[in-house]
Image 1 (tube, rainbow over the protein chains, first blue to last red):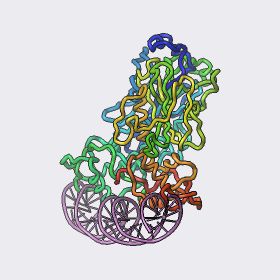
Image 2 (image 1 turned 180 degrees about the horizontal axis):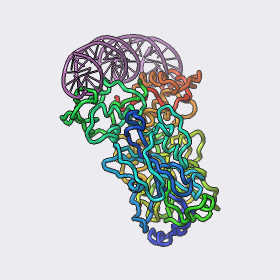
Image 3 (image 1 turned 90 degrees about the horizontal axis):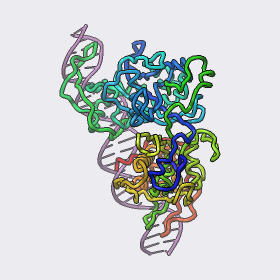
Image 4 (image 1 turned 60 degrees about the vertical axis):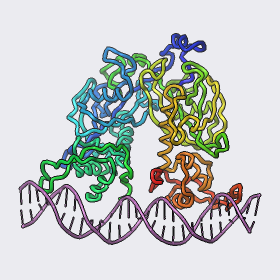
Length: 272
Length: 272
DNA sequence: CCAAAAGTGTTGCTAGTACACCCATGA
DNA sequence: TCATGGGTGTACTAGCAACACTTTTGG
């Protein structure tokens, strides 16, 4: 941590803190930005596909452009509300202003971006979070927001093989690209795919998560066996689904997420 | 990013920025902390083992305690020096005040910590970096530093199987634990082990990196074959080392790092 | 010569892939 | 009863661990 100080030096720690001036340094703003991913039905009957929550900025800078939801970290209690105890709290607060968040969700820190000039107002350091959740409700607009929507990754060029087009405000294209890549690789060696599903699901739905995030079809029979052979990934509820597919078919078993966080062995997307 | 603003609203972006007051928000300090890891000979003839660079704080708060080297990000040009263009620049600047940094090194962002109360002076958000480097020179003290040293991870309880003892200032025990775990898992699926070695090395030295970081012995013959079978991991220089081991032995071939960043297939530490 | 370290050959096991096939259900 | 999707059986194959063995060097 810091080795420079804000004015006072020497003496005991109490008197040091009493003489410390928090405004002695050049101001830096800290924000959190959230890449909230969910899997929901696509626009044109393409089946389920990954979507990200975007907001259209109603204020400067970058007014009118789409961006990841975000906001300043509240360092102290303010008239707008209490201080954020920790960065994840700030991320959830920012997000809950845009959409309803039922638990449990998976929230994880992605990376922090702090290059000079990335925000024209002042030096801004943004801590990005990745949120993975089952089909969330339609978002509502918040303060300073013109519009909020779930946008398919495909439309943003973050689909499979697609080049990321420059479309979002600030450096959010890069943040989103990092988020998508993180989600893709986390599916390989953790049981996080279940974070995109409701509490109870079928193996085929789980495979659907992998297929839509990785963007390629998997061998249904082998996937089935591999999941069941991975200890702690899923847990049999003993129930069957109400009915099979639309065009008939056996009623699949229902599973819930198991206790394991990491998968041994991993499901590798590289090997075809 | 931010949806709140610093005072002005409406109008075009230029007039908005002119009326913007960067001091309107509660002050937050941003620091970078670096967990610099290197592999060097241990204290008691134990062979080479991983070390971390620590400094003993000469100033409040936490004066006298060991900590990871760190410092405030310079948001603007100051009498002490120019602003940091980006967070990695700040990390390298902070580190170069403590020890000589020959290139190339591997620097990667670890995580950001911003809980309330982690620093008594004010709200501090710390961006932690992981640096992996070949045997670096002895550190020198910097401003506000009583002492600086390479400390074996084993002594800090971050060795294999050891519980991390609370020893470092602030929450640096946790940061270091995260750094060590990141380094261990990165060896599995990237070619980063070469970051701990000089430009030219032998397969046995490469195996020594894995063994000292993972804390267990690997099968020499199979390791050898596996490395050579992994495309792009190492590149034959065509040269042999000057001499074999101390007690005799064949002269090993010399290799340099190959172009591949990720390994297919990975070297898994889980499988014995 | 002997010990030590580098490097190769070979074999058996395990885990993943592909493909065939049976089961249960809706229309 | 046929199409659809769930689920199982089984052969094939690639990759890995184990171990034996050869090569090259220092003392």
